[in-house]
Image 1 (spheres, rainbow, N blue to C red):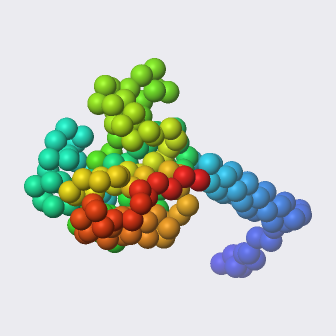
Image 2: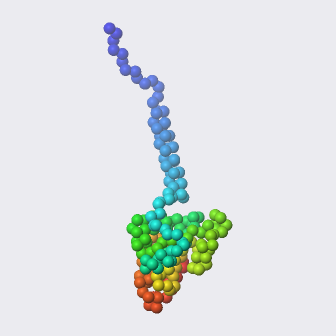
Image 3: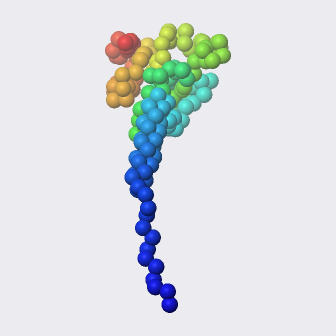
Length: 184
């Protein structure tokens, strides 16, 4: 019987193996950093949880339901609009509160993409003097001056202002505070 063979011992240097692992780890680290930078500049779109109503007939529906209309004047290219969408309209508690209190209507500006807006969008922008995005306009039940909120200062501030507009709408127009136009 032949004697048991001794296990083979590696010949040569084994230093190359850890260097290969270090190079692979470095490549993965660089890839993750680049992915993080990309995601920071292109955040994922969260689903919009607000049930937006069509522009046509929104004020009549709101009147019949004794609720205010919330117009969200927005544009696809507008970074603050996208932030508001992620922080307010994609937040379940905020979306539910908005749907309970208002008839929500999204008014999408298409000037940059198509060169002009549909007539109904132009008409609403002129009516409420919308000259920046985002702009939220609350048309109170029973008439009176609308509450206009231009710009975005964060979800907490936005929800506070919407609640204040809702409370203001509970009073008859003669007892309401002066027009609630807020510009940044």
